[in-house]
Image (cartoon, rainbow, N blue to C red; front, side, top):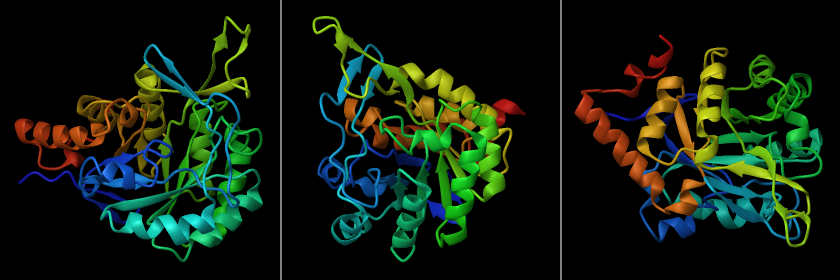
Length: 302
């Protein structure tokens, strides 16, 4: 009998497909399109201590093989999330990752304290967002600063701590190892790549922040190689993401060493893409006679 169940930090996920932060809201709108309880989990919109309006100006630009975004962590704030959004998310009957952003280490600590006594399953510590002017990626591109924030948050966290890594780091493997040594329970990677677009008619950058985050199919081969390298360097679960749009992509990441995967930009291209990936993985397992994903996890590196 085939089972696509996976376990992350002692928590059972019905399958390895999680929707990525910032691409799925809090799940309610997508639940009008399909039953999102079919998913392994949902990573919430990036949350901050105080509400954020996000960045001014254009926020999304389509590329030939994906998109760039400069949303800037627009969100209602953690308190509103806990009171207004989390109850609805719990009714969706899937695992919940609370994606936590911040401008300072104190922001991350205070956000964690607020999330500790809620029903979220895992805190996904976002130290890799390229679309904010302070904090975010600035804390995640160097091993020392990444380890510092992870260590201090881990001291106060009652929840498993998943750390989301930036592909723009000086060395993503060094950052991953440093986060593990500092107490991270799991890692998710990669966040978006730093990129930009220029409006040739205005003769100026499209985004007010100049740089933005590149995602979508174009980044998949690079993201896959980074997941492969990190999975071989750490002993904690790795959740792979970056350009996953099909079940075949997901299987590649699992074969590279991912315990689970996250689906992001594909949700904008095809709203039920994550469901297609769930079904595709299970059909593949049946066809290949694979009873558990453990049989193929990391098989490409054996």
